[in-house]
Length: 269
Image 1 (cartoon, rainbow, N blue to C red):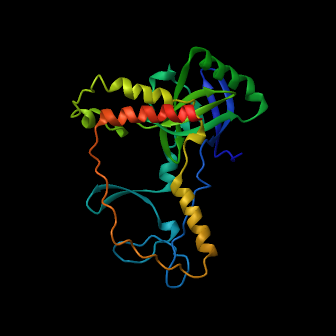
Image 2 (image 1 turned 60 degrees about the horizontal axis):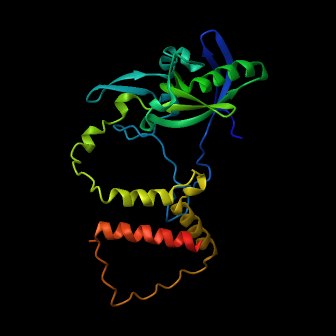
Image 3 (image 1 turned 60 degrees about the vertical axis):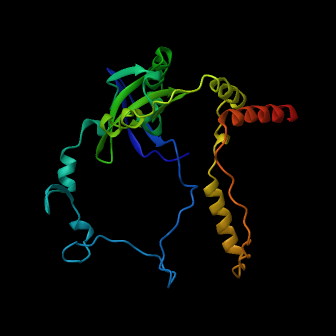
């Protein structure tokens, strides 16, 4: 189990309990690369360079700058940023609730697991969790992570709570700007065929439904590189490669064939 990266309090009116939070997702299994000097094989290190003097900047001299004009900045130090710390640094105060199905997925950003931090807070945590379950609502609150206040939504799930960080309204582009030019109406004769395909292919969700073929290919490539002593000779290209098939098809025929193929595979299985 991942170590908690945030600890604080969950609060609803006068009900308070200590909680901790851990990321619900992990990328530790992803293939990661280091940047190397191809000539020496040594790793490359990065550092901040002064854009005018071209000299490296020491860690203690780094500061945040807010641009108010060209080459004109308001400088903020770590001490300045600490002075504007909010109560939400250590407390998730549930301010309001919303029906669980009313939050559109496009606003959901990152999931985290929220759980009691000690046995004393178990009862208060369970009361808040089960009350939200019973009313089929999610809690809306705020939380400071990395000196930035984020809107969050708390969703009861099983014995715990999943806390989702939310994108702010001005971070989500309005869909109308992208969909307004789509004025094509679906052919009513084609819709039932697509519905048949959907019905045949519908299963209960499982994480096994999705995989990362690029990750798998990278791991295979890395393994081959480890074993290879000499680069393999390239095979000669075929002189007369077949011309690519035309992608102009009749959608009705394609859908009918898809449904028929699906039915055959079902019977065969």
